[in-house]
View 1 (cartoon, one colour):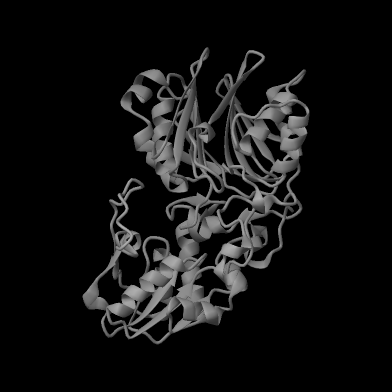
View 2 (view 1 turned 135 degrees about the vertical axis):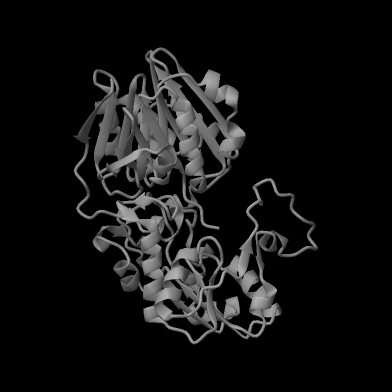
Length: 463
């Protein structure tokens, strides 16, 4: 399973800000399932509740109805991409500095954390967590003397490199920031008189909020006293580098991301796959849920029937009790189970969104063989992943990427397939608007921002 680091939600000027944030995070749960947190401001006091696990497990009615008071709130859900998953690393991250309450929520990953952390520690800074996000907070505090919070945040952001969408709560202010490369999404909306911010627009839909726009790269929004002001804290990078994996895999299909409909982008990827590599088969099927929408596009373009032959168990959670060692592949089979009568003697085209390590797919293909599939072909709606990602996806070393070390033909044999085709980079770019604005580093090794030396071995947390 691929992991992407974190989801953000913020709201300003709503009488039930904490409850709205809870539902916003609930809609974004797919972006992180390790921890969740909400911070509120009632004009005098900042309050917080954080915990490990899913949103529904961390928050209770007593938190939303009584403890988390205030009309300003922001929340965070988290996947760590390296290192341990610990409560001290849960966000939003809150500190008090010279009588001012500061809170931060971060989606992304800094690539110069090592050098900045060393610099700050040499100056006497004591770190409480292993998150790269804490580096940002210390930089903000460092630049706070004699200036406004907005100026301090802008100076801090001028020092950091990498991917970051940020929410800050500074007493009564709610501040949103998006990095000048535009790696991670952050959208603005409105519900009634309240402004809302979220990593994806599916959070707005649940709250019946109006989508206004996506924040621009290098933009800072400041909301205070019901007024919103936009600042250009940094000029956008010469080449925008939005993460194309948001459209391939991470975002919910009912979201707008980078002002593009995720559902239609994935269908287009499937259609282009069918044009690039048609297949003589009996039907097209996905491995739910990731390959469903590309499979729909492939089926429509190819004229082959679409069959949902793999049934997902929607009640498998993180606390599922693992079986004994003798029950091999149980954790894979408990999530997806095939409709046996549909498989025997059939020529099947499986559409997947990506192949990272290949171990899970290999198990599922083996299961279909054992059920009597005559032929198994696979079409993949993203190109081979050959290079590590340093901007917030959990394949941070080349050794764990099957396509980095093996040819497509070798991968097909390893997976037990009759044929395997990945969409070409050119084909993928045809499926999205503004193809020049996307980061393709995990496919071609062209990194928009170079990381610190040794960052692949970094033991810090990304958020």
